Image (cartoon, rainbow, N blue to C red; front, side, top):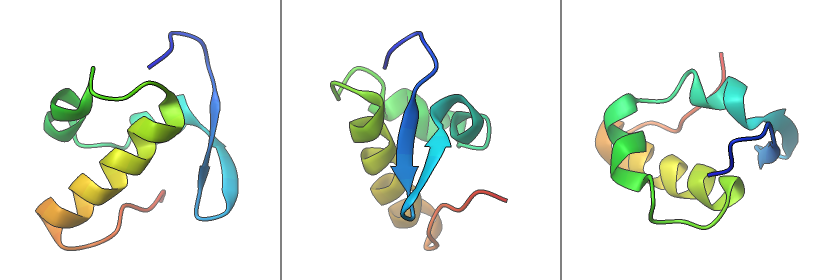
Length: 61
């Protein structure tokens, strides 16, 4: 992931990646870190991993 603030698409909405990251499970993020090329790919991988682990979609509260 990049060190600069970026926007990603979640549920058809453009959001700030750093805002989403603050709500993500740290363990899942560590598993994904370094396996993708950009923030959107990170988010997409996280969404799949979150649903697999918790049985529910990741949503921003």
